[in-house]
Length: 194
Image (cartoon, rainbow, N blue to C red; front, side, top):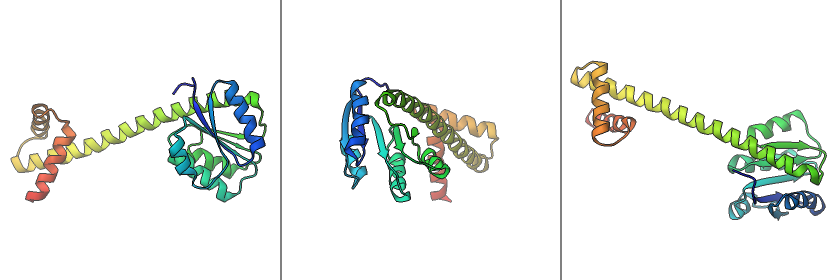
């Protein structure tokens, strides 16, 4: 995600506070959509489909923070949260929810662009780590499936582990499929026949 001509959603129930963020974003060349009605926030976000979300909360209570953290967990976008006061538990909850930038006190339009840039960079770094973790989890799951399928072949055909692996690999190549997919099919067939 680059920062050229982004559509930024500003969520704030205080128009005066929101205008500071809006002005800073517009000066940086971004399109701004402001939401002041906090009801059905996820539906509004889905409809607007912003590139980045700025949430400005004056003195949020736990319920409001939880709603904002739900937004952050539900959307795969950089989320910048501004609060006037905070505590350690709120900061930790924001980080756990995937908030890209959590800014306490000090709302000035000059700070908006650097905060946006940092939030996008942090979001992109986190996104890359999440994708790498997902690929690693999938590879591990595939490895387990292949090992189960090898065990089935070794037992049913009385062959070595190497021969079972070679048979799975050859079948996958002949059918232009992934080995893990062939292994899943074999496991399913073995359950039906067993």
